[in-house]
Image 1 (cartoon, rainbow, N blue to C red):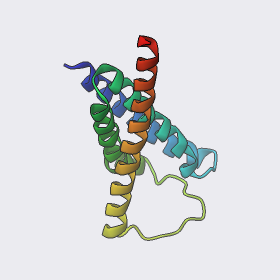
Image 2: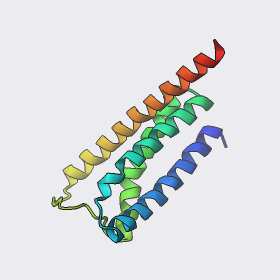
Image 3: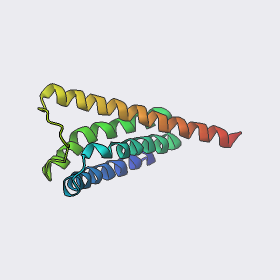
Image 4: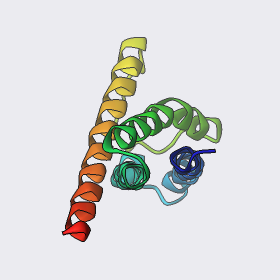
Length: 130
């Protein structure tokens, strides 16, 4: 298995555990689950950084995008299996259109964040060769 695939697989497992535990914690400690979003972005950026170091920035962007897609689909499913996360006072109906918009939005934002992490990896790589 290629190293970038291992990085992505580990990140998927971390993200699923994060969604599961975050969902439970948001109910147990009564905080809005959305407050955990920055941690997701850190993970996307880290995946982009690590995969870019191993291969290239396009692979980093794609792996982070895949991770974002899986978090917005499989991660949401996992967190709902174990009880609806605390979303505060946010009350809205999850229609098909809303669901699709969320999946596309999270995937694109994850890819952009992964590309930013990849850009940092490239800058550090360039700096170390100078």
